Image 1 (cartoon, rainbow, N blue to C red):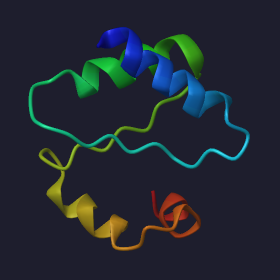
Image 2 (image 1 turned 45 degrees about the vertical axis):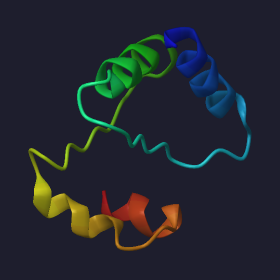
Image 3 (image 1 turned 180 degrees about the vertical axis):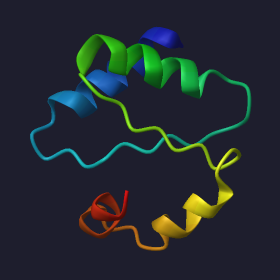
Image 4 (image 1 turned 60 degrees about the horizontal axis):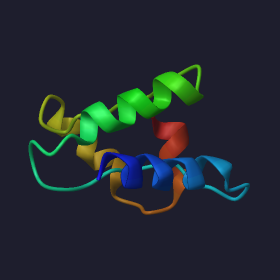
Length: 73
C-alpha cells in the first residue's frame, strides 16, 4: 500500500500539468505521514492545511479552481 501511494505521488510530481495536491480519505490511515514523507524527499516546501485544526480555512476551497485557491492560501 505504501509503495502504491508513494508511486502515485511520484506520478503526480512528474506530471508537467499537475495541479495542487489535495489528499482526502478516512481518518487515521496515514495520509499526513505519507504526504510529509513524500514532500520531505521531493520538495523544499510543504503547505499543509488541516481542517480539523483550522476549520475556518475550509472556506478557501469554495472553488475547485487552483488559480482561485492558491492566491488565497
